[in-house]
Structure formats: C-alpha cells, structure tokens
Image: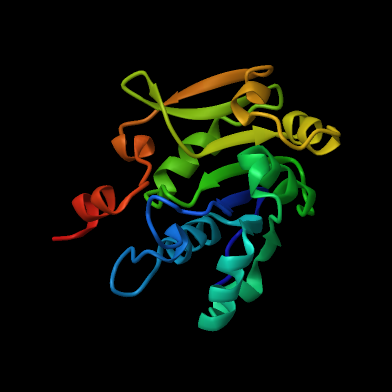
Length: 199
C-alpha cells in the first residue's frame, strides 16, 4: 500500500515503567489482533507520517524483540535509559532521531484511541508559530502537533529533566475543537483498562 507521505512525523512515548498497570501499556490488547502500540503505529502509517519514532525502555525492547513484530522494521526505536528524567527526555530523544523536523505529533502510548479524523483536524490547522492541541468541551487532550520552532528549541536545549508542560507554555497554543472525548483518556491502571476494553 503506497500512502502519500506528509511533511510530519510522530514520537510515540512508551518508555514509562507502567508501575500502576503492572505490565507494559504498549503491549495491552487493543483488540484480538492488535496491541496498543500496533494500533497506534498503524494509525500514523495510514496518515502518512514520514517517520515514526517509538521511545521505549530496556524492559520493553526485550519484549518487542521476543515478539519479533514485523512492523518494527519500518519505524525507529529509541531507548530511554534515564527514566528519572521523565517525559521531556523521551521527547527530546525522539526528536533527535527524526530525519524531517517540520511538524511532529507527540503521542502517548496510554491513549490508543487516536483516529484519522483527529490527526487530520490537527494537521489541517498546522501553524509554524504555534502548536496544536485537541480540545473537547474546553478540556485539552492528546496527541499534540508541534512545529519546527518548538522541535529545535527542545533538541537544542542542554537540559534533560525539564517539565514538558512548562516548556510548551513558552509557545503559542492553538486549541482545536473536536467532538471526540477519547482525547481526554489516559489508561493508567487495570481498572481503567477493564472498564474500557473488557466486555
């Protein structure tokens, strides 16, 4: 399947320890055929991202190799060895691995509900001076779309343990209204997973 590539990339954040879940969130079952990480990667492939980077920890990389997922041949895996530096460092590592740094989605692995409609809404209003965040009934969610200016700012900073929210607060934000409450979901524990996925 030949998809038209768009001038954008995605960083999928999957390096957390998943302490409350008790197992890697990326390997939770989305349905009978796909895990969270597979479903998310498939959505961004369909959308036509030029590059897909998944940031993981050493535990997860061992499991990925064990499962020998074929689709990992078409993406870039980056290992975060400093989980104490939190999300900002994962984003920085991922951005450093990009070939094209025009626009980039930041996607959390614990929100696998991303859709083509949502990605199109965010990308259609891309802005070289602001970043785009989806909003449902005045509440912000994920994923977000950042531009070259923000990418370069993060890549070029010498610090590794900053707070991503604080960094983003230095830039303009476009609030993109969407009719999709799943942008607000974060699956952090078994109770939340079972409520949404167990029939």
